[in-house]
Picture 1 (cartoon, one colour):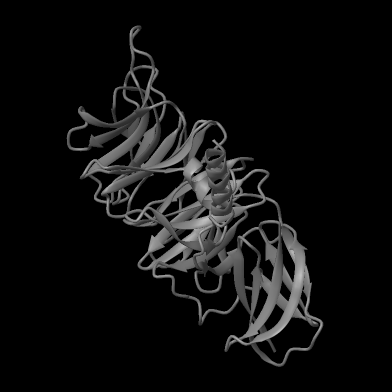
Picture 2 (cartoon, one colour):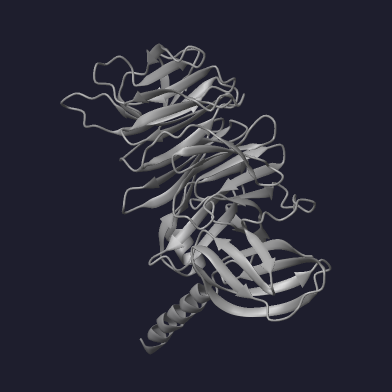
Length: 430
């Protein structure tokens, strides 16, 4: 019996040591920052996306902004929709239309060229553009059994069709080839059949029939096709269970990334998992956060290997858009950054945006969209450490960092790092 007790104690000790050492020792990938929409002003970003000309359209509070993708400067603004809560923005592939939801919920549609609001539409739960930009698919309530999914012609802005005999439609996305829609819906029911939530797959060439991918209790927070159209990923959080669900539409294989398993892997209880964003067909990015929100990681997760490959040094929780090999990341606080899909810096020849970091009179002024404690270090372009500025607390908004030594004329890199995040910014001493 004593031997059994010793074995149990040894197992507990081993488990404790394993948990303490569980945090994966993987590389942190830095993101090249482009612009800080907030500039120290409280507010929320609704998303940022590439336009066909390579520039960016971003939603800040209730106003879309056109931003130069090289300098980070605001080129022009679109008409404000005058609402306290605006988000979930998207842009058509042709760049002609920009949409977002506001309180109501209502859908606001902008003409990007003129900057004018074209129309508002109510009863909105989810929406997506057709890949060619000619149609808008809207999911919402279905009080008259006319169909939970509406189709709007983007030239006339008139509804041209309804389909899907569901009680209600919520999240919705369309495949890159424009042939298939996946939707989170509540199926119609009768007295003997309780209401159930479903993920359905609808062939747009045969809208009357659909395939049920999964039936589950309410709690789906996001739904997205992979860039190759072969998978879908969603976040499920019903208050008790939190996980990311990945479904292969060809093989029907299901994969789960559960908060309980990640808690064991990282050694702390995960209270929040962020929406998964596809970087490619084998990679998703998502965040994990503890409670009371002291530990935060943004993960690059390999789907086939089912493991974390890197940490991404950026708080992305609003949107990711991809153009060629570059991913545009957007945080809630309005920080925009570029990430090369191959994790190679793409901004070596782009000057630092002055709204992020400025140098004057032996001090740096740094804008942050999150509050954290970190160590600051200055390096030259060869990677040589020039100054260790110590550890200090950074607040949301503008922060002053004392350099306390003169710096010769040249280009430098400021690295701000703690246990969970690392940010690097270039600055010039003239």
